[in-house]
Every structure is written in C-alpha cells, then in structure tokens.
Image (cartoon, rainbow, N blue to C red; front, side, top):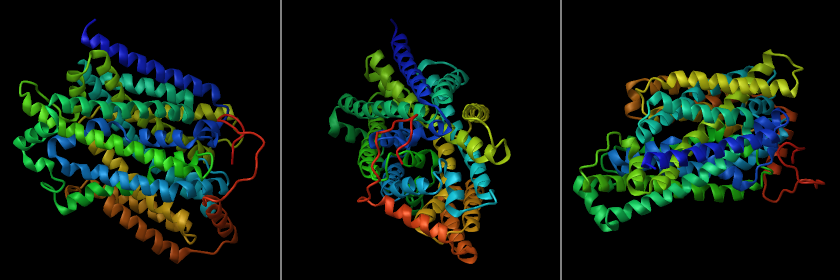
Length: 510
C-alpha cells in the first residue's frame, strides 16, 4: 500500500464512524426538542467536550499554528484571550443560562429565550435574532468548508472543490439525521481525537528537531522576536487578539450546550473538563507552530507553501502513513464538529424562530423535524457557494463571524442573566448596533488597527443600558422568573425528586 492509501483508509474509517454516530442519534430523536437540544440530557463531560470541539474549529489546527509560524508567540494572545473568556463563560453564564432557559417557558433556542425572558409580544426580538444567526453563521459555516477544501487539497492532492464537497457532504448527512444529539456525540469523539493529535504531534516533532534547546536555537536563528509575546505587535494588536475572549458569551453554537445540561449544577464539572481540554489543545497548537519554524529552518529542502498547513505537513513527515491519517482525521474532526453545531443552530433559527412565527401553528413533530433538516440543507448550500471564493483566510472568516455574534448577542445574554431592568427595546437596539458596528468596522481600514469585536461589544453594551433605562417598565412576572432562575443556578439548589433518570428522546430532566 502507498502512503496515501494508508492515509485514505484512516480517513475513511473516521468518516464512517461519524456517520454511524449520526445514525445512532437519528434513532434517538423523536421530536423537535430532541432534534434541537437533545432533551436537556447532556452530562458535564459530554457538554464540555462538545462545546470545546464545536468552538475550536479548523482554525485550531490550521489557522492558529499557521499564525504562530508566521508571526511567532505574539499571535498566542488569541488563545490566551479565548481561554480566559471560556472560563468566564462557564463560570458566570452556563449555570444561569441553563436555569433561566428552563424557567422562561422552557426556551430551546437563544432567540426564543430572549423573547420569553423579556415577554416580547411583537416577535421582533425573536425574528431579528434569527436573522442575525443566519447571516453570521453562513459565513462561519463557509469558513469550515474552506478549511475542508484546503485540507484535502494539501493532504491528498485533490481539487479544492472536491475536498470541500466531501467534508460538507459527510457533515451534512450526520447533522441532517442526527440533529443536536448527533452533532454533540460526534463532537465528543472529535474532541478526544483533536486532544490526542495536539499532544502527540508536538511531542514527536520536538524530538525530530533535536529537543527543546536545539528547537529554541533554530527559532532564534530565524528571528528571536518569534519567541516574544509582545515583539512585532502593538498594544492595540495585543488587545485585539486577547479580545477574542469577549466573543464567547454571544456564540449560539457554544452556549446552547449550557442550555442542554441536565442541571445548572453540572456547569461546575463541565467548566473543569472544558477548560482543561482547551488549555491542552491550545498549547499543542501553539507549540506545533513554533516547532514548525525550527523544523523547516533545519530542513530547507522541505517546502511549506501555505503556513496554515504546518500541522498537516509535520504529521505527514513524522508519522507512519496510517497514523498520519488518524492525525489528519483530527483536523477533519475540528472542521466538521464546528460545521455541524452551527448548522443545527441555523436550523433552529429557521424553524423555531422564523417559521413558527409566520408558518403553520399546528405542524406535527415530524413536519417540524423535516423543516429543520431542510434548513440545514439550505444554509449548507449557501455557505458552500460563499466558500468557493478563497480570497479570505480561514482565520479571517472565523474572526468576522465570531465578532458578529460576540457583539450582537454577548451584551444581551449577560444583561438578560444579571440585570432585571433590560428591556425589549434595549435588547433589540443592542443587537442591531453590535451587528452594524461589526459589519462597518470589519469592512473598513479600521479593522487593521483594532479587532471589530471591541468597538462592537462596547457600543452594543452602552446602547442596551441606555435604551433599557429609557424604556424599562416593571413587571412582576419578569421579576419572579428572574428570582427563580437565580435560585436554581445556585450550587446548593436541589431540584425536586424524579422517579427515573431520563435520556435524550424521553421525558426531560428539568
């Protein structure tokens, strides 16, 4: 067998395993709540690995090592900011969001939570939220498809289009049929695979470059500034990179995992597992980029044409072809786990937050699930068309979508959970302001000096507070739900006894 055949066998086994998991989840899915939220039955470990895998898309194994390879440790501020942001998200958002989405009419999507939390009868809040989700996630899904095309192009010499279609097709299949549970269970398998790869590759690569001292010497020969967290970067640049952490609280595909936890108290264990996973994988990606600098300095006969493929090329050089294939599967895992999670959220926005407002009120569970699957297909097709334009890098596409969600939804989520005076008009003005500022700033020369999430988040937060103070009207019902949500989120809260422990597809543990 040739090297490429070994690698293709490994990739095929991985893809088959993902489809099998999707089929299992399909058999467990009975209604729209199961399809969108897995019956609120996720354990802390499953939720943590799923959130991490759906968060850390292809940029973790392609974009981040590539950025480190080109600019050095100054690019690590993105990972530092993300890790801090993820910890804060698990600590302060996860327990309250799980409790409040239950209290607020058992909301199963972020837009429906906003509407139920603020008692908005106009449906404007839910509609605008759904549209924002569709717009920014289409760009986000597109970045994953670009990453898939780059992966197959550089690993197997296929065309970009062929690679993109393979990744999109397999992900679409298990997401279409498995829904949220399928996306979540595949995320767990993919998260474990990513962790193993990001530990093994830098360890083996470090040995290949002669150990720590020799590796550092080689990097210094290229440019000693590559080992500095500040050299080559400005204060605004460092702030911009670290500001990625601001975006966590507004990412629907991540915080929906909090909503699917069994209880708010599960968030503590989820935080420990999730942040531990994140620290290990982020360090692995950063170290891989640095070791790549040393390896290609020591081996000038080897050409790295695209810095974003440094992880791919090192794994192909250093491992047996079959093992290299499994490492390559980890890259696919990172790409596909994010695409699937985002497609599910887009589907929920189309069906739960848009169709139910204007469509048939008496649609059956089977009809709603079918509409959800059609929504997944529609978003995937549009994202695929956008992905055909390869002018933007993976990191740029991800960065734009991340900023959009962080600025549009982040302040509203925080204020919904911690400030009882947030009003419908304050939330609506905040979301529109955040989205508009990100679009305008991100498509102007200003984006070269400051990441658009910073002005977008600040503007969105200020507008939310100012407009809410001007339009707030006391509501006994809202106050009662706010107090109930806070009480349920406390560590010492104990839910009423239940007769059986439910699983996805059965009566849910509230």
